[in-house]
Amino acid sequence: MSSTIDELDIKIIGILQENSRESYRDIANKLGVAEGTVYNRVNKLRDEGVIKRFMVDVDFSKVGYELTVLVGIIVEGGHLPEIEKKISESRNVSAVYDVTGDYDAIVVAKFKTRDDLNKFVKGLLAMPHVKRTYTMLVLNILKEVHGVEI
Image (cartoon, rainbow, N blue to C red; front, side, top):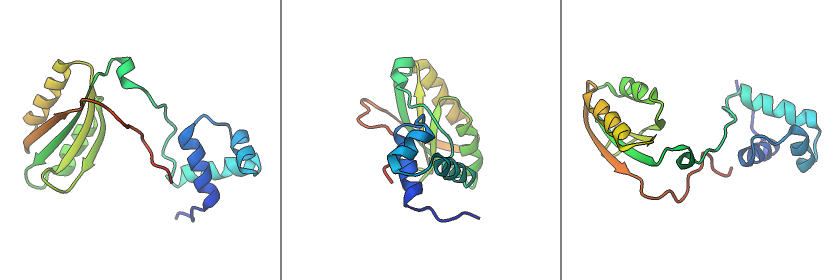
């Protein structure tokens, strides 16, 4: 059972969103609380699944992933969960969203080459129960963050 998230938890999360390597001591100093308090709060937030992981924000174009795509997928029948699970296992996929509207799912993926993208899309179309895909190539990334200010 989860406990209530209070203002201190929100402030700790905000600092960690900016820099997940910030030391507990520095966070404590910024917030005027004991280091042990920060340690305990972060552990509580992790145990409750509020903080899922600590991650590095990578500029993917600098490591060779020049192509970012959004793929809308239409799936036949009640097979969406199994299709989404299979797609989410791809190393190129950064997000799979179950959505409303014209598509059943939206996939965000990154590729080094057009050939890699081509193989991915053809692989989607070869999956049983995938009726149609619609691929959009991202021309410019104006904002790409993995969190919002809370």
